Picture (cartoon, one colour):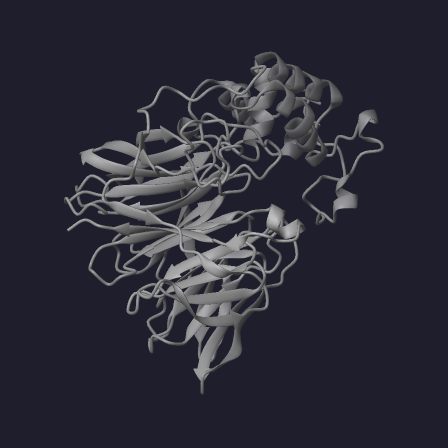
Length: 514
């Protein structure tokens, strides 16, 4: 079959060395590629096939064994190419994968696949590449007193949510075993309330009266395509909690944001439904007593959104981090007529592991910048990755963001941003759920103090807690006017064995700056 002119132009662009941002021709589809007789080498084929779905990962991002045994076999199956060695192994039909995720017909010829396989195996390292040289961490976090509250019970360290109530300083802790615990942070974290939930709590917002709240529950926390997440409103009546459903049938939601998009005086909702093979980023517009759903992106991996007037046209837009497959930052610009237009801000290769972000002015130029942690390692490539870490992308205006700073941090998964030391610039606090256990000192909690504009000194705790930090939250625990930090532990072994240790789910970093 001859290659038509438009496909030929697209292939020339894809097989060139130009950056993706400079390529004007859209990539050909997998169907177009499969129907063409491609006389290309392995690198050119990888450029063409990978770019049809996401940013192409370079061979050096993973080691040879991970490509060969984990990632490439799954990519091949997604393109519908089944070979002899697959027989006797788990196939998509065995894993309850929805239709359409793995093609039922081959979208690549075996000879072309073999070239791609050879290209990745010939150009990938034997071992994961080491981190680049970086400023060594110092032990002891300046300006903070670190302590670990102890509780008089044996219980599991499975923290799924942390929130600090701004008026009281109370700590609200979500637990995988379907509970929200409320602690009095000014009285030794004495337990004030224990609230049962339907599934694992993941996000929360208090209502105007400061007592009632809306709780986002994830449903199944482990990877799943089920839609059992929910948003539930809790009302306290005579010291008892009564609930009412706001949203249901959500696909593993992980973040909730709210603003009044349509000007009716009622807050509308943006829900990041992370999902697994399927997921959504959805806007729920209030319409009287109900919400009307509008899907902004029908893809999995929605992690967090910021709601702001990004294009300064007088209405609210959405800035989203997507973290599955086609990773990146995407803006959804309000067109003023109820519709939204997607604009790609940044894209990352699919092993990048985007985890969380904040949108803050890091260099005091009046423009908000992107602060990103990438270190999600709960995927097919569970190895140490030298490109995991903390990054700042400076806002150059007109939706142009350029990376200005990077600190390597294996498994970086969460962060908070604030002027913690109250010196007029913004500092960072980052956690890792997938650190290198052999790294000394342990680097799963790092405080980055901004000393001069754009330069940060890294500090870690004096004590190694040997925990796995999944959650982090800032707030004024003691109501003294500064920002404290709480970090929550999630220990997988507590899911599967009898607990015989005291409950110590958090560490507290009390801000001592005057």
